Image (cartoon, rainbow, N blue to C red; front, side, top):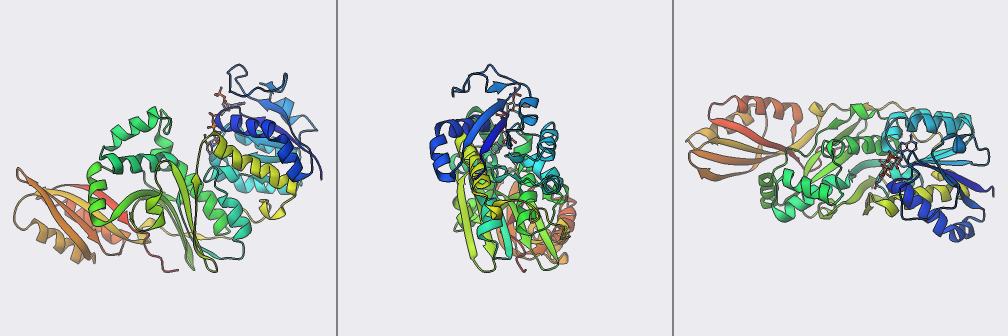
Length: 431
Ligand SMILES: NC(=O)c1ccc[n+]([C@@H]2O[C@H](COP(=O)([O-])OP(=O)(O)OC[C@H]3O[C@@H](n4cnc5c(N)ncnc54)[C@H](OP(=O)(O)O)[C@@H]3O)[C@@H](O)[C@H]2O)c1
């Protein structure tokens, strides 16, 4: 077997974990692969900060050419994150015939297809297991172990920050703002949390998951995306009373003529395995036509869990595990239509603040009936000082009908505001 000589770009959280595993476990890695697995170079803009791991003199530099121009380095590990300059480094490495491993969901969601083509042209490969689900080997499972299945559904809790926030809100009854601050203090959320709480991170991950699972190329911009910033402690409490937990899901459903892709909060029945995924954990629920249902669960982030997936990719290179390679099967050419959110069917939870006056409920029920929305459950709570809160759960309805009903309800003089609209369950699962 050819030796694996590694250059790591980015000595931050994940980079430190990768360096620790490559240096500390080298003899085990070499025993398992039967070849040399050598970390030769680390490049980072900052070469002075103590990362808690001692590296041999001269290994750490700030000069990217020491990796890209070194003919002995045949495996480049990109761990700096973001689109640029990661894209430039990956392209340069692949063009030079070096294999690339990355944990960067953004650059793969945006350029995975182009990278795959460059890799094919230059006889190398690009692997990115850590880009989705951190340490959970979900991409390998989809490409390899589940390749005998037509994958029908992929529903993932793929963002640890939002899962931590929603789980904490449910445990403590605290509101979103307070819980976000706690997540930031504990290092679960960044100072600018937009990418996580608005769902953008989950959207990149769903683009990658769906591209592999449904054998097509998904443009992340075509995925409907809604964050968790409007979820209140009242919603969590109401969900609980109706028998649901609120989870931020990245959802893909493989219909015959189109695929449904959506990222948004969902009220999940408490009995469903996804409802029990707490803290900052990730889980990906997959349904295949032969396997049926399965769920992969584990740490979706963190220094060593993420590094575990990155080094696992290095090991796959050494094993010459072709089934793990991206090549032609990732970001395939198959054109799949992505359904508009307006055409998706799902149940809804609605929380309205209304005047505490006779006839309001009847007016709302009339508008729902006119728009073919049928009500599954209803509660009127908190009548106080002339104001009442009404919570409603509907049966499944086409999204555009629900939107038109909500617009009419908003126009009623006795409705002060529609405080929440949250989708319930997984929606139209007819394949
Ligand atoms: N952290 C996780 O748990 C996790 C989990 C799954 C996936 N990921 C992904 O893994 C990637 C890395 O994440 P991370 O948390 O390890 O980030 P990080 O801690 O910010 O580390 C990135 C490192 O790269 C360095 N860097 C930035 N631009 C560079 C350049 N042009 N040349 C050389 N070095 C450069 C940074 O230096 P400065 O600090 O000086 O800018 C920093 O040390 C991201 O794509 C992220 O989405 C992370």
